Image (tube, rainbow, N blue to C red; front, side):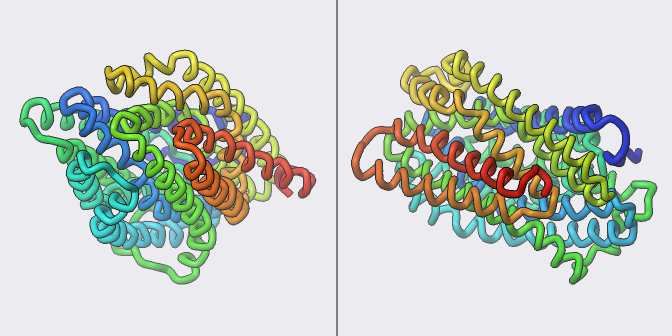
Length: 443
């Protein structure tokens, strides 16, 4: 069934909300099956195994961030050509995007498997969790082709205005992941390798379903397996939009790896507590993430169609929605932090560490939301270098410098917690300055 849809006509608010809702539910299930690993591992295998799985998230983000950024850049190219109704260009963009994804998936597999033990060592991962961390990550990266291709296919479908089918397929893969997690760990007594295997198997299922749908589209730009190839000009266009986003994601990942290494210094309980909070934060930011994707597609399609005023109105609505939702959810996270962290572990010390981080971060969610949302708008405008530079300086250079200096002067994990709202404030401040300097949101 073809559910592609142009966002260049009709109610702006209805278009954004209807498009964002399936993405929100998709992200909910994505986070659900990511969290299922931690919930089931923590319950059956204990705090050390939970620390191994939870602390791996930042390393995974660092290594896959670049490739996902390329997928985001390709989505902008697809959205603009779709909005402008350039079907020949759109067909070339889709097939080149898939070819690039296949290449990236192979590269990520090789790089991830080779670098896993080296980076975990550099992060100061405790010896007690090192074997489980290496096992989990190596199996995860062996199946990274499925993850890359799912993101590529989902990005294409969403850029074509179809946010429903990725949701349906993600629900299927999420349920598969949870069932496999439980069965392999609870009944077959497997360790953390079960969580990794369940995740990659589920990702391949969703990738295959998305690929099948693109192949069956009733349009000239449907996916033709024989037409998958790297088109030189289109590749340059995709990389022009995607590399800055990829670098941005990788930089954020590197900074978070540095943060994780600082957390590791406080032991397994701190690792488990902060890892559990990261899962909670992942759920909390789902509405913001959903509107970010909707904003990028909306702005890309409308700018491609030459409808600047419509893109501007959608941007204002999207930014306000993201900021208000994020702050409301952040305050709820602060209030219910002990109960939320307690879903992942029952150790009082683990809950304490996670709760303290939630209290510091939750109050300032609106700053993080504004940074992400306006960065999404700029990507839709074809200006990915601006958010890349902002976040490289704010979320990497300043964050790492802050931790390095405070780490030498004080042995207090509170400084690790505060590095996030501090750098959110700086990045948001720069975007406000950028808007004022350019005298408007879309100038």
